[in-house]
Image (cartoon, rainbow, N blue to C red; front, side):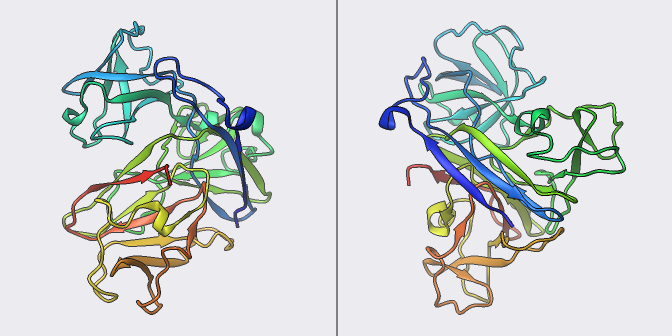
Amino acid sequence: MQTSLLRLLLPVCLGLTAVHAATQTSDIQGFIQTTAPAGTDTLVSPVFGRAAVWAGAAQGVAGNWLTVAGAPAWTADRYAPAADTYYVRVLGGALQGQFLTVASNTAAALLVDSGGLDLGRIAAGDRLELVPYWTLGTLYPASRAGVSFIASTSSLARQTELFFYDASGTGINRAPAASYYFYNGAWRRVGSPVTSSFNAVIVPPDAYFLHRNKAAATTLTQLGRVHPGKLATLLETRPGSAQDNFVAVAWPLGLTLRQTGLAGSAGFAASASALARTDELYVYDSAQTGTNRAPGATYYYYNGGWRKVGVSAATDFSDGVVLAAGGGFVVRRAAGGTTGAWIFDTNL
C-alpha cells in the first residue's frame, strides 16, 4: 500500500524559486511523501531532480566527448564519479530528454556514456544541464533513519532493504540484482563486507526499486526540483526473447495511461489484436501488501486505445487508469522488436 502527498512550492504567486545564471530558466521546487508499510515491497522512484551545478549549451561532439559553450573553466575530473556521480541532461534538440552519465571532464568538455545513443545527433546550441544523480546517501540520508527507513542491527538482522534491478539484464520476470541495508552509519550491500559503504550508489531517474520494510512502516519524503521539458527513456528489446524494462516517470503527479505518451512512442509497439499482443504494460496494485508481489494488471495498446488483459477489447482504459507518482511499472517488449525511446513531455 502506498500513499503520497504533493505540494509544488511557488513563492510569490508562481514566482521563481531558483534561476540558473547560464540560461535564465526557472525551477519549480516541491516534495512528495510515500508511505511504505511493514512487510511489504513498495515501489519507489525519484520524482524530482537535484539542483543543477551548471546549465548552458553544447558546442560540439567528438566521440564520447561533449564540448560545451562558454568556457566554464571546470577543474579537471571535478565531475568524475566519487561521492556523487553526475549526468548531462539534454534539454533541446534531437536527443532532448536523454540522461548521459559523466565519466570525467576537462575545463570545457565532458566525457559521457552514450548509453547506446548516437551522440552525433547533439548539435551546437542544444541546451544542456549538469546534475548530480540521487544516491542512496542523498535519497536516504543517515539523518532520516527511523523515519524514511529503519536501520539494521547487523548484516543478518536486516530491517529496511532496498532491492535494485540490473538494467542491463536480459529476459522476463527477473529478480533484483542487488540489495542494500543501512548499518553502522552507512548503506551496505548484501554479500559485501559490512565495512564497505555504498552511499554513492546512484538511483536512476527513470527506474524504480523495491523498498522492503520488515516490522515497521516508514515514510520517505522526496524534495527537489521538477524536471522541465521532456524525459526520455530507452526501452530495450532482445532478438530472441521478450524483455522486461523496470521503469518509472520522474514526475510528481499521477498520470493516466494516455498522459504517459507511451503508446505510439518508439519504445512501445501496438498489438494486432487481443490475442496477438506485442508489447505489454504491467501495473502493480498499490493497495496490495506483501513481498515478491506480482503485477495486478496487464495492459496493451490496440486499435487506438489501452486495453486490459482479461477484459473486453472494446473497453478503453486510456483515461481510467492512473499510474501513481513515485512508483513504477514494467514494460515488456516483445522479442525481435526495435529498441526505442519513450519520451514523456512534462508540458501536459
